[in-house]
Image 1 (cartoon, rainbow, N blue to C red):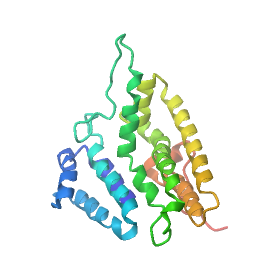
Image 2: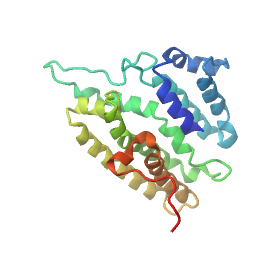
Image 3: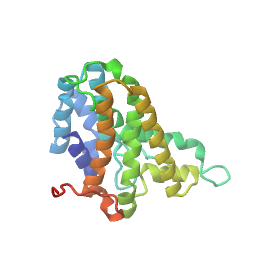
Image 4: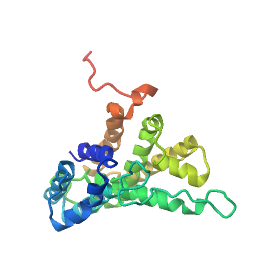
Length: 241
């Protein structure tokens, strides 16, 4: 449900930027949301405390409050009027690479990585937070960066230039494909750290492995990402032998 609504939010921000900008204030104030999609998002967030303990639930909700606020609009700016990555230049007219942390900061805020990482461990199945908390930062990083890599093709085909890869290419004065290669390396290192951190801690280690592999499968199975066009898609159902 969260992923489905998140995709709908991603596709609707430009059209309903005013309502998206008011989401946080209405949610905190307990006010209804005129847009049914945002009301559904708010209702879903309130269920978080049913399935996760207080601390993970708090992180899930706060990460999810950021998501509608920072979605890009048609003018390349977020619903709050915040540019995902300002196109700055240095004193000599070159791109100012010193601001690259802004792009990373916004990516961490708008990607929902924290929320999706904590989703791996509902309290009914994984009651000991001590077993998994150390892997959460890298799992959240994996969620965001793997999505960037696996979304790159469809976003290039759509002519999008407000995504994280485009922003980092601008800041670092690199070709986009070089940035993709850097992110793939970051993803691989994050996965290695995750596995090392949680190794031998069952059933937590198996849950993480299922999530890592399932996240890739989600992208490969969904026509949204158009990966079948480059030979990376998978059929949803294969005939039994």
